[in-house]
Image (cartoon, rainbow, N blue to C red; front, side, top):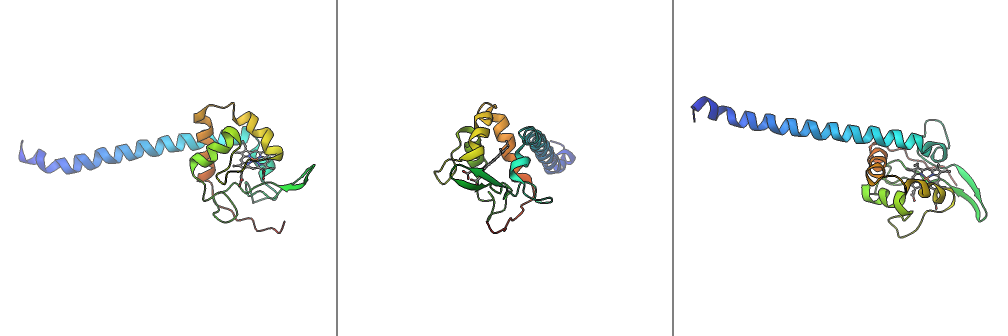
Length: 143
Ligand code: HEC
């Protein structure tokens, strides 16, 4: 192998890697955009936002036969949101309503799950990836 080519190899390898990384980023961006679209179409914001500027941070009171239920914070805030959830955890809720703590979502979310259960697995994954990509917003309102 000519010496110059040999010298170039590491650079070429690095170039190849960076193309791979760029492709992965583009795929992520496409998935996030799709998730955002689906979250808008699914009206997730309407229920999961109590206050302007606190999009997805939950806290909206909902009357149920069992008393008032507050919508959950579905931003990646580790304390008040779903920051400790994995992608699979979110996909799980959207598939059959089960949460990582072996509970099931109730109230209005139960009805939503009937819809998200009918999406494709990839669409549910897109919503999960999108939710984990948005800024974490703590919601510390006293309930
Ligand atoms: C009609 C109102 C409503 C809509 C629309 C809605 N949700 Fe919910 N969601 C709720 C309520 C209420 C809860 C809390 C249920 C409970 O505590 O049992 C909840 C809980 C959740 C949870 C579980 C959070 C946790 O900490 O347990 C996730 C995740 C979630 N919703 C995601 C979504 C997504 C994604 C969408 C859009 C596709 C959506 N929700 C649309 C009302 C809604």
